[in-house]
Image (cartoon, rainbow, N blue to C red; front, side, top):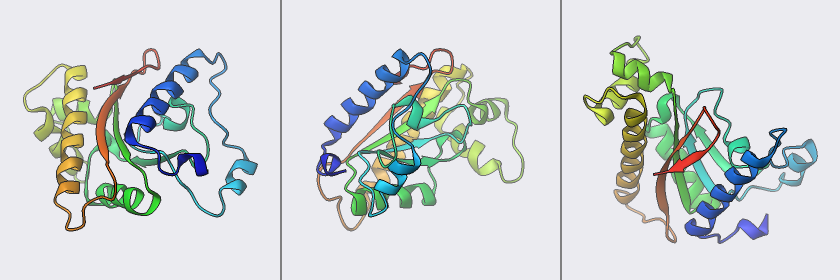
Length: 190
């Protein structure tokens, strides 16, 4: 745990990149230590090196994608990796109370929420998600480009919300975007 305390956003970003490379090399798809003992070892608290805001899609598993274990990353999941008040509050908590300096918005290829926004399909409660995505992607119809635009829009939204706070973030905090490829498991940092 102590090694993560005070980690810069640059170090955290490199750790995510290295983790994705390690995961891609693993033939059995192992991840970092997520054992019961690892959970017990973190009973006194957590000090994640990164916040990862990602889609709720069950095929996207940030701990695996970044070869992370218990206590390594603070994961926030919303359909289409959209940013609402709850997501911003969770990010703010990780920055202010856990000392996390990197926020990564992680979209993915073949995102159903982005597809629904492109197609104009939405249900009653889904509309708050597809409306945000439609605003982010405009008239873009290419699914990959739309996913990228959605990620970048969410990253900008987080930056804006953090900048609007009365209390500035303690230490330097960086917000970045990336796309996880369902086809080959790679993460492309935008």
